[in-house]
Length: 308
Image 1 (spheres, rainbow, N blue to C red):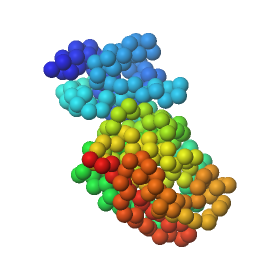
Image 2: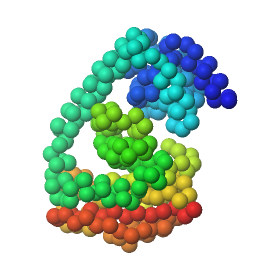
Image 3: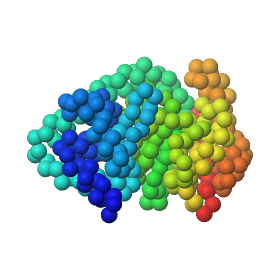
């Protein structure tokens, strides 16, 4: 009852109700929200602080920026119920959504520019291994969406894995150290109409959660960039709930040495026993390995569970 009363008090003001509706559709910075609602930064910040204190909205620091979005869990469900009560034909709401579309177009343009500058790098690597659709099929088989309540995608990159699981109704969080890739991910998720997933800036060696809260974790083509893959897996295990499953999709050992010099790969693939050792060291129980042969790169999928 306290959550409901706090929420109702927080949204009983026109601007805060507008901000809540915007945060229900996208992660937004204060400057973006100011641009949409046409109000000053101090006023918007004050209203956002009240929404955060009510438990409806959360702040996600990312370098010099701070994004705002609905807080995950029961609060988000309550917030969406409140937002759904706003009439579709409401003039202010319609104008806010039009300006939100402008913000999204600006983000999409920035993401497209980044992809244009780096497309050759990704396209070259993709040409060396099996089609990504096959990898995604295996990921869904290893992590059946009906068994996943909350997904963490480490090193989320373009946010593609979040989008894949969101289509099956799975909410998730993607974390990445690259601000540029987070821009790409936000634009892609918005274009795909994904509202139940979000991305945030963070380090895979120091995940920004204090306790176990994910029942599925993915590392999709990430560990070959890592200085300490074992530490990354150990940190992921720390935020996994009992019975949760971890899946690593990466390359089996190979000899394409130019991936080091031209694409910053730290490791030229991983051996099965090496990955299994890291998983056991993190307190997880490794499962069978699946392989998808390519030419010359083979993609392997290693999975493990945290004992219940």
